[in-house]
Amino acid sequence: MRLLILPAFLFLAACDPEPRVLTVPTSTGPVEIIQPSRPQALNLRNVNFRNIDRKAILEMAADSEFREIIGITPQDYANLSNNLIDILRYIEIQNAIIDYYEKTTSELVDR
Image (cartoon, rainbow, N blue to C red; front, side, top):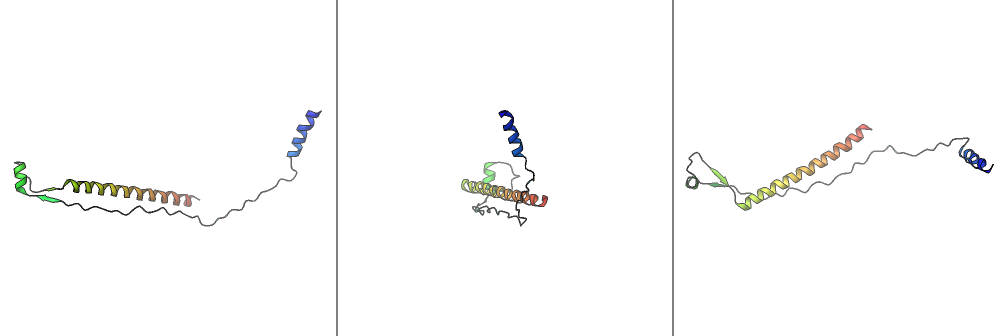
């Protein structure tokens, strides 16, 4: 008898004659979009291109089709390489910012 009273009590205690309705306050105000920081400005290094004269070319190679050769020093080559790395970094960060805004605004439009 004791075994029947406990399940019956639990069953009846769980039944509420009037269901309660919960209201949850929500706000429909504007959505705040976070502003990502801008990438560092490009600090490009100077690269000096130098013309190599025709005499030097003729001494190095017997081919007369060369009109002009432009050369750079190893330091200028390093500067040029660093400039390209900085430009690629800047473009990647700008693309990440653009992707963020496209994703954020597409979620706002879908609502």
